[in-house]
Length: 188
Ligand SMILES: CC(C)(COP(=O)(O)OP(=O)(O)OC[C@H]1O[C@@H](n2cnc3c(N)ncnc32)[C@H](O)[C@@H]1OP(=O)(O)O)[C@@H](O)C(=O)NCCC(=O)NCCS
Image 1 (cartoon, protein in one colour):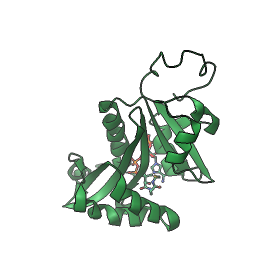
Image 2 (cartoon, helix red, strand yellow):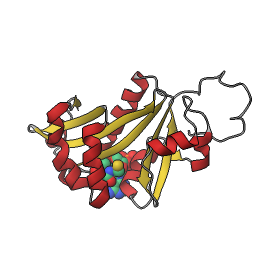
Image 3 (cartoon, helix red, strand yellow):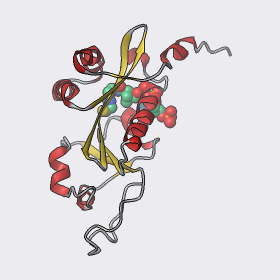
Image 4 (cartoon, protein in one colour):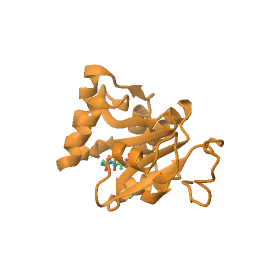
């Protein structure tokens, strides 16, 4: 069977940063990817987060990721979305690979994402990148000095979502030295 991947090759251009007014170009992707309060929140987040990465096809944005760091050591993937017409071609995976690179370059230790448990595509995307479900109580470990309440207040978690975590590198040792984190499980 001959597979015509010319379209995918064209999509496989470099990722770009969207800044300033250019971020409005990502709104159609967000409209396509989310409904209700998620759409409202994603559009607001699009204007507020420090990092917005995008893939283009024929001059139009077709896939976008909204990224932030809760503290320097903690990355957070707010949203990843791909236009419906371009899904299942690896664009979501490219954006998540890139997001992890972005966080590694900024010396993050862990990355979190909150995903609706019934969003099979999204759960697969993150789990295939090594993320695993993290119990809320586990946010008690000190990631860059950010304790459970700090993390919860910065993450937008709602009922029906699973908090996913991926450890990029070992937690810095030293800290308080009181063994407070010993025995607690950690993201992969
Ligand atoms: C989730 C989303 C970003 C995936 O984008 P995509 O470009 O279609 O994903 P990819 O083609 O790169 O596939 C990545 C992985 O997700 C899995 N996946 C993608 N779509 C899937 C689906 N409909 N059902 C099950 N698994 C799916 C694939 O199996 C793939 O894993 P694998 O290649 O290791 O098998 C896309 O479906 C989307 O934009 N959804 C709407 C917005 C959203 O829900 N975003 C996530 C929450 S922030």
